[in-house]
Image (tube, rainbow, N blue to C red; front, side):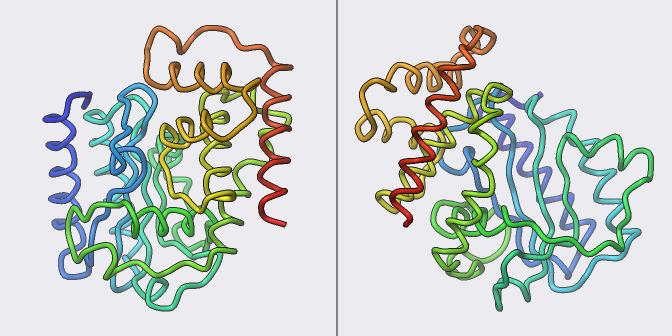
Length: 258
């Protein structure tokens, strides 16, 4: 399992080498985004987020080889695993929302790829890609390929905000299922809605301690502590308190975007 900086860098090198071998001249670039790119990575709480940009559609055979490669590589990854998408360059050159993608991989998809039940011909789009593009352009790292600012488009603010909002509405009633992620993600979205800041979850939480009602500081501090400390992860949460916080934050976000 990759957990220290040296092993993480080795994992990233393996990712690049693997995609160079699998995609050859079709590969435009491999780009790191998310917590690892924004210096807020935690081995137990963070996955390794990256995007692969290609010139032409990969064949179904190539997609299966990519899946097999990533499944094998997952043994070297942190517990949360690898999260990535393959996107055609034309959708960066002429951005559309939601953005189509050629392939997606996450820890939750491993069993489907192993069972061969994924339909590689199905055309899919993902609103989350707009947010990934923004973060990659502003805070990302090119593991291979041109600088992110040369590769990724300027996403219209309304698309970026819609992409963020897509991920938070369910927190109002289901935040207790993923409290750490929910708390810090709500902070990150409010930081953008209010101050147009593009932050990691940790940065969003720290921003919120200076910008939201003091009555919610304790739950934010606990979210930050739980994200960064293994000892805090399994402590029980108060469902009512979490839902009250989510309701407050969503109202604040909504007020700033109207």
